[in-house]
Length: 362
Image 1: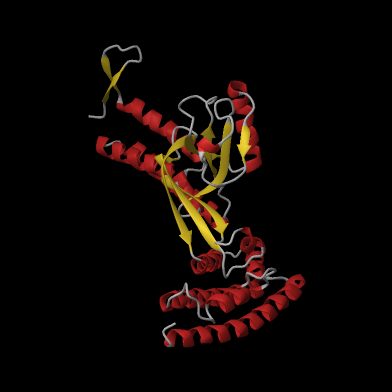
Image 2 (image 1 turned 120 degrees about the vertical axis):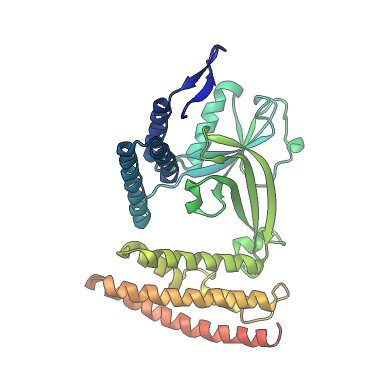
């Protein structure tokens, strides 16, 4: 029995929706998901349709549905392999001021926007949108928590705070049912100086995780924030997270078959030809090769393991690049190999010092 009751929009008698009508609606929704590159959602609906056709004994339609399922799965695999899948942008928006509608005042939302929507364009879009109803809107440029009681002329002004956020779990989570989003910012106990000078020995990270009422994507562009929590990473945790991110970058590039030469070279360059003091060698000197009050032996062991994996994968990446380049990239390859050799020598010595500290219980 594939019928379901409904109420007419004018409050009339309940009726029934036929199975064919439901199937048609689900097929339309599937096409919309495919156009939006939400392939996981499309496959979920096709799986549902396959069950309907199987239970109804309609094997002709079942075959068509399974073929479409396979085609969507293939498209997803191909786009993922090429890293061509567009990733939506997410922004947290807070509204403050009596001039906003009551349902917006002092409320926060997460907006899901198209990949081309930059922060600047989104700010302009919201300003233009609300200018018609509330007049001029003042943007709060700080990403700190807003104390509405300290905002000037709250009864007569309209304030908006906008910040870019990311799904917890990274880009891959963007296409699933996302309820948690994270905002990250560098943080130091003594203020901005350590941040501006890239003093990673003192630089911590503040993470604010926002939980929304409904998982995105949803039927509306924005979903209200219902809870948030804050977490401060120590300088050591921040540095380890940074290096773990580089490990993930290398793993991703090494997973492509055939390799993507341009992006592979970019990742290698960012890994073994660092342009700033936050290079792997500097991090080893700060966190592995010397005692620190904010680190335990377990922390040091984890950092050594991450750094060892980073060096192993960087070596694989350089070897892979050597096998796929043309003659015009030989000079660049030589630079990679020279830098990597020098880095490996320094880091190995620093890792040995770290092992000695661990043996001493430090």
